[in-house]
Image 1 (cartoon, rainbow, N blue to C red):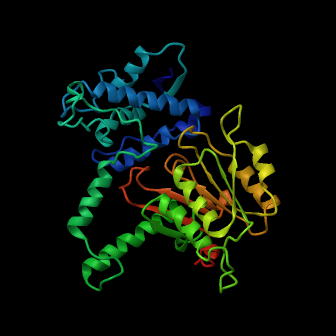
Image 2: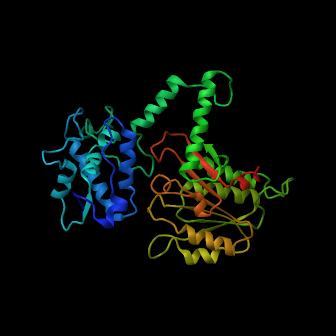
Image 3: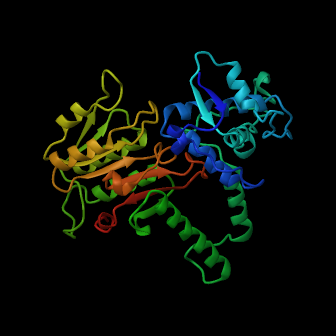
Length: 371
C-alpha cells in the first residue's frame, strides 16, 4: 500500500504534485477541484496514494460524531489520513504531497457527502443500521456534492420556469442558465462550437439518437442526398465488452436496415481491446464504429488514437466513429478535437451531476447532415 508523506515535492514531481494555497473557509468548490487534481493525476502512484488517503479519512471519520471537524489536524500538522496510511503501510511507496493537500484530502467527508448516507431505517439487516457508508460504485452513479444539490435547490427556488418558452423574467433567467451550461460543457470537452452540444436525458439517449437518425429510413436512401444513413450490407463494429446501451441500439439498427453488426473480441491475454482482431474486422463496408473510451467493467482505456487511424485508413469513406465516454469524461481530460472521433456520449450522473441529464457531442457539420 502506498503511503502519503507531507513534505515539499521534489523537482520531478512539481508539475503534477504542486498544490495551491489553502482556500478560504467555505470555498468548497475550489477544494473539490483541487482534490480531483490529485485523485485523477496522470501518475498512478499519486492516484493510488490520494485514494488511500481519502479512504483512510473516510474510515477515520466514521468513528466521529456527525458534527465533527473532518479537517482537524494534530499538533504537528499531520492529519489522520496520513497517520492511518502509515499504520497500514508495508513496503510502501512514498508520494510527497503538501500539508495543504493532506488537509483537503482529510476534509473529503465534509465536501463530498460520501459518509453521510446512512442505511435505511427500514432495512431488514439490523447490523447495518446507523452505520456510515463508504461508497465505491461511482462507475454506476456518483454521489452528489453539496455544490450540486445546492445549485438545484437554488434553481427551483429562484429561477424555475420553462426554458425557451417564455418572455417573462423567470423564463429568461432559466434560459440563460440552461444555455450557460451548454457553454460550460462545450468548454469542458473542448468542442469547436456550442452548437455541437445536444442535451439528452443521458448517454443511452445520446447513443439512441445517433442510431435512430442513421436508420430512420430503414435502409432506403433519404430524400436529402446529404443525409447520413445506414443501408443493407453496411457494417457496424462494436466490442464484446460494451455497455448494454451501446449494444442494443445497434442491434435495432441492424433489424431495421439489414446492416451487419460485428463484435471485436476481448484480448485473450489482457482482457482489453484486441487491436489485431479490430484491424481484421474493419474493411470497405465498415460505415460505423462505436466503442467505449474506458471500460466500465475493466477500467481499461481503449487505444482511441490507433482505432481512429485504422478506421480512417481501412473503412468506407466517410465512416463515423462514436465513443461511449461515460467513464472517461469524469476521470480524465477529454479533448474531442484531439481525439478525432465524430460523436461522444456522456452522462451527468456518473460525474457528480444530477440524474436525468447527459449530452451528445457531434461535429457540427455531421449533426447538420442528420435527420
